[in-house]
Amino acid sequence: MKFFVDTANVDEIRELADMGMLDGVTTNPSLINKAGKDFIETITEICKIVDGPVSAEVAATDYETMMKEGEKLATIADNVCVKVPLTPAGLKVGKNLVDNGQEINVTLCFSAAQALLAAKIGATYVSPFIGRLDDIGQEGMQLIRDINTIYSSYDRINTQVLAASVRGAQHVVQAALAGADVVTVPPAVLHQMFKHPLTDNGLEKFVSDWKATGQSIL
Image: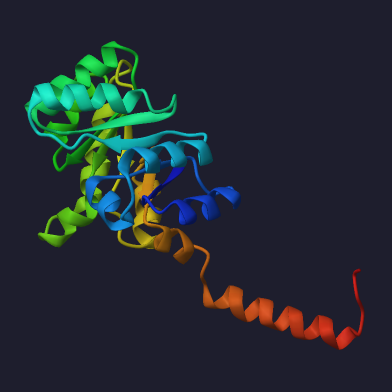
């Protein structure tokens, strides 16, 4: 499973990329707002740090403006993946971009029916928001399983399932078990995945025992 990080914080992206943890990056208007920097400049900088796809989302909701935005975003860098909402206008924009050879990420997916529409237009990725479904009492991970089952039944579907709205390390594990192709996580969740008390305790014991030997490797 590929790991994307869900942030527009360039420093966090650079740190995780240096660790070899990143296959790509996803951003959205909320994350750009949180970063507090120019949108185009931020996406340009991220694309230079990460070799994999960088999702940059259109901001408009009408077809004509979204189309212009999508075309502009596609010119930023070769690894830009234009992000469009799962609406009729968004899918129309996505279809035109796909026809022009552009990778797209269809976002705000909350049902298997919607995921079928994303696959129909040849989307590169579809992003089911599992955490937001959990928030309203539905099982977000079941949606990942349902989409993966449907997609795997058809050889002509190449759309990758990108698990989004991930709230913790366990979500990542569950998404992997459910067959998600990609998971996008906030930096804090990726750091969570390193943590286990037995790892910390074991390392502390190893360090203590090594000091007791009085030796040095260097």
